Image 1 (cartoon, rainbow, N blue to C red):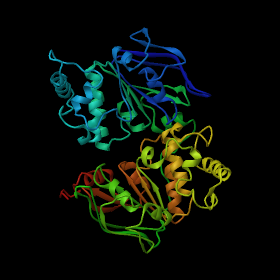
Image 2 (cartoon, rainbow, N blue to C red; image 1 turned 180 degrees about the horizontal axis):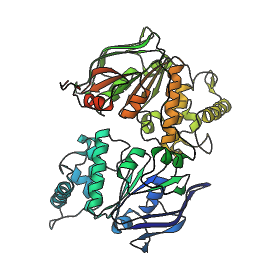
Image 3 (cartoon, rainbow, N blue to C red; image 1 turned 45 degrees about the vertical axis):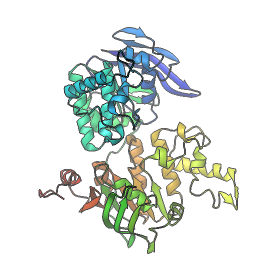
Length: 504
């Protein structure tokens, strides 16, 4: 089935998110829509799926104009969508999630889950998805949750499948599996709209590429285009994909973690006897597949984990039992992996978010009195320094794109005196331009003499930024290796296999 957009325009006040966009997805094609965060990609697909109504323009399916007033109309027309943030209810089973909104009953008026389960098994078998219909969604890894979303679209006969930033929350292994599944879907006749900003994935999977920049189509480069050419189209300027940094001038130990254990509420150990040091003027990257204790380790260092033992020492002071407030004031900058929930208060203005951990100290406050004029003035300076793109510092943080939200978090954390930067998944979900900026800031922190500890599942990021690499597997640091270690060897270590063939 083909999907065509003609002169589709969508505005939000003075902001034109989609500016007269023309686009055609051919039958049985993977069509990549490439662009920076905030370029208008997701807005355009929300229009196609009926979540937003266009100001003007037409949508055609197989050459016939259709009106899409809501997702029900989109599904009826054969258009399904898998959102970047999954629309699943964690406490429901796979089958219950899939029938939600399409509930059917048997002759006794009882919900008929049996038929849904059979359909799930059929689709799972056809596409080798391996999904248990009775599994609770909250117990599934992120990669399998995404497959549930795809199955839901296919069960309701989607002939055009929209995947909105589908790899943003996936590990490298899950990403490779998704790209394979996309090709299988395409070969079986499904047209796929692949919204992304990741250049390697576009080169690997796309049959056609459309680049959107600031709401407009700026090019349809060939699939043979280089990553540098694609990146330049995305951001409108030459972009260096290489990370340049001088040799580390590591100083004395700044952070020392010894025999750290973190447990969940049931007492199960998520971090097991972890010990390492980070020196001032160096970047230590912790690599690992998501779910191996990295998140808990990062939170423990800033005092966000309740059930822990061992020691955390910053510049000679034991901060193990300190509160989050005291930990931050001790000189730790913290960039959490989930900027939406842990890094920002979405309903607060950008200016307010920039002072979340300094609102009670000069120059923002005099005693108990906050100075709005100073807050606004300093916010303008931070926004300019960190290249945050917005209309006003008084806008709610929720109005920003993902890349700009991350810049706000960085601006807040790096605009005060710090000794240690802890950054967890610092570029997850960001476009190439924002990634370049974040990497430059992280290296600048190292070069200014601060200790930097990053947690990342992106191998390229780990090898580009790190001076040393610690690999985590099942809650333990199983290896400490130099940054020159090959991707292949790092991949093996992340799977718990030493390159020489022995398991950890």
